Length: 140
Image 1 (cartoon, rainbow, N blue to C red):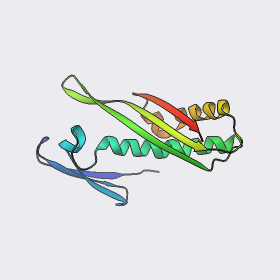
Image 2 (image 1 turned 180 degrees about the vertical axis):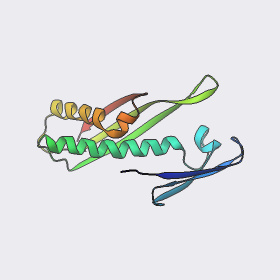
Image 3 (image 1 turned 45 degrees about the vertical axis):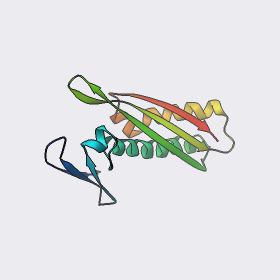
């Protein structure tokens, strides 16, 4: 199975603009130097990585919980991707996952172990092993 997205950039780095299209045009958005490195309008690659990671982790956590006999009512995850200046360029230096899950009948210690297993097993987490991935999981 392969998934794809498409991006076009026009112009130089600082004044150019681009568009990104996810999958079969389920999402398309503009991006620019300002939306990536400042606080301009539009999206950026790091937000798309964050969305992918949040979605992947939520599904992986749900699967791990269900596999342990605890079907969740809801798993909500926010992923924050850190982009930092390093030397002459920029680098993604980490991802912080913050998950809240409503899971009837589970104790917090088991919940935390399952959350860590989901973080390690999520395909996007495995793809991002070059950076530090942290997790706060809250049972609600």
